[in-house]
Length: 477
Image (cartoon, rainbow, N blue to C red; front, side):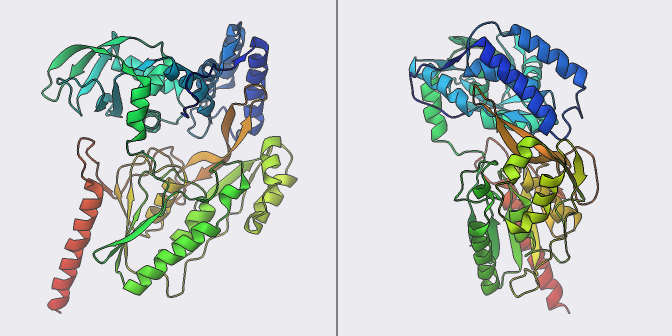
């Protein structure tokens, strides 16, 4: 959520403007979304549409619009279909400026339980890792069920990561009326139930704390050596010099990324490293046109990022592709522009060749993933696993590699709220059509109450043990 000018009065929209936007939202989703009704029947969408439409009687601000539209879009149960909440910052900024407050505890969800990840109440009776059982008389299950119907995602695991990204205090402010204090029940790690009444925390203070915290997504690029082990954190698979808007063609200009990845593998070749760690954790994703260039350095055979890539055309999708000038995408651009709107077609995805020059990495590859390995990043993990290019270590991804994705945006005419939609159906390289995350070869979890990096530490120790075994074996030959 983007925070705007403190105290600024949020803009109001008339009931007629909001109804017009709702109509445009529904019709454009039907026209542009690859398969809006794959998980939810049209009858349920129609019923909810009419309920929302008839409920709009007065002028509302953008937060109220978001609360009406986002659950409607979330009916699709697709993670790549959602309303952008950045404009809600106007209302949130005004709320902060007026001295507003938020819930004093942040949580993460593990095993369907609300687990304390940050405590801003300074209560000595709450520890990181404790479980919240209820808030103001509402059970944790009912709270989570409401969230799961509000946020977009194919499954609870996916939505749990969205809760982490949104943060629970902000999400609670969006979904519920604020309170001066909260009655909560905690189950501590001794299985003792504790009842507490906690005052709310200043929203301004909460945002100040958040601004100094490490962010979940890390789109930045990093390359280094850990002893003689090469370590690459490729960052987001898009142009670091762009604005990350999926409707802006500059986002997908590859020059900056190609220079970075080529330089990294030159350093690896120069150092003669035999082990490579590619860290895909906390990576928001991007485009296969970027990630394939990296995978080519570790591949030993031609590869694809999927076994099937089917696209639906629409007016909105065509408007975007008219701007695309990347000649490597001419085959897709031509097909999209020449296919009648509303029709789907399968794209003949060409195999990407592997590197055969001296920069090709010929050692062992270890790829780290976690629940925040999003979008195209999860697809890279499936390439590594399905083609056996390396060993996957870490957490199962929330993002599912067989998915409805390859997104674009459209903007609602009156409120200017952006809506993300998937134009394609994508099946992972091995042809598995199940909607489930990528399960690593070695499953590990980071401990939220520890500053240690358990996944990286395990991988480094694994490499050292393997190297020691190799040296011992070699000495006996």
